[in-house]
Length: 344
Image (cartoon, rainbow, N blue to C red; front, side, top):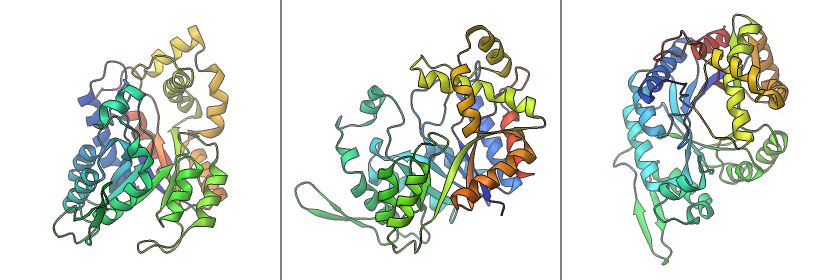
């Protein structure tokens, strides 16, 4: 069975590219994804990273929704400890009013940045928001519904709140994660769950087992519902796919080695730098085992086998194909090629 396909976008920034050019490229990508029949398109939340322009998912979602008409658009995800649950709920209730029936609210627990930026994002400067994460998830589910939610204060008082005056449809709330904790919380609250396999494949089997075995039906979901993410590079030839993989592989090597982060190199820049420093060599084989890199038919087959192995009917691909020097800054040629090749 061929799984449904969706897209995760970090809005990558390459050397010499402006944030405006990177966003323009991603908005062209979401339009192409809709034309190709992809189910949903999510924007990530990361901060203070030279190679990532997806800092504010709701803004990007609004722009994507305005340029499309059928594809679901959402967050993958909003890092809830950085934000007020009410503000997040109001933002996504407004997005749902703009694009009824097409908005997904994916929620994560990680900060999406380094400790300094995390403190700057949190007005309280404390970790209380992380500790209250389960409560805040429940609040959001209620707030975006037509019924609203009763919020609790540390003093013991309560207050009835609605994220929007008169909702007719609600965003679909998903819990994201790569740990036992997120899987168990999604199960306990009866929420759909996404395992962030593109970030870390470790613990996948246990997380899915915990989610499925501990799932408690809720008012919005009667049975477990999950899909997986995957890093993908597809091209006309396997050799080109390998070339386009290298810039992101070198970025992963920087992250794992705690090296200073930079904008993504182009394919040519990455090849020249790799020949000189071998930065990606220690991680390349591991990435090849976890990522899906090759021709369209080969990647489609591998994704179908991946979905069947883990019992999911949808895979969200993060198209991490790098750009060649000659490709325009406002285009996402390699990533568009990946979506086209995988869609067949």
